[in-house]
Image (cartoon, rainbow, N blue to C red):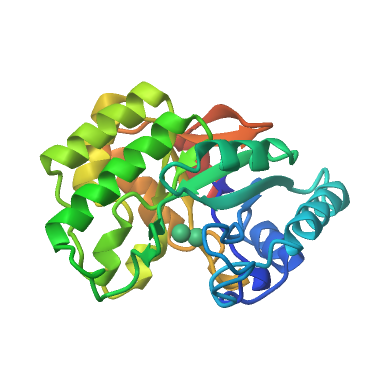
Length: 273
Ligand SMILES: [Zn+2]
Ligand SMILES: [Zn+2]
């Protein structure tokens, strides 16, 4: 069994391919499950779609879910299509996101901290009046709040601010503390392979953080964060071998917001190793 729980398609405005293209690519790569997880609409600005190249319009959300449901039926027996979303987590918006996602028949919800208020963590320029140290602390405290919210099945790309140079993948005291909170909250992490395709050239989170997560017994799953169909399952051989070296024995899969585990050996067999 092999799964990819983090994929995007054209609706977010910065990815290519349709949902069906993603499913077809997963089938061609021998995956047994494909998690569809486009970016949630952005709700914490006044305009309905403040950044059309970042996330879908709120009106698209029901159509996105309907299309996933249709694909799940169409591909039943060939590949398990899991319905998901990569949701923003905005500090203090717990009730809003909980109610929003409870209203859809999702199999999993990835919680990603892309925004600290109106500042995006991918922006290189720091927000006015804040130091890099403040941003670093604020980011991890927000991730901790996301974990505790109980909304999410998976926390997305844990050390992602390293992409724009705001941190590195070190296991600092606040990262350790965050991992303890995640363990306590019983949320999964993802090994997101997209960092290997970026200038930072390191997966999310770093091997050092992954090792500590394995020590604590935090469940982990796999995500390519593919923004084009050909990247579904990208670098999964490298990822699975790294997870095994870090001390993980299984990867998580999700159905109806419940988590199940797949032994890593089974996933490696599916990859033909
Ligand atoms: Zn993301
Ligand atoms: Zn993503």
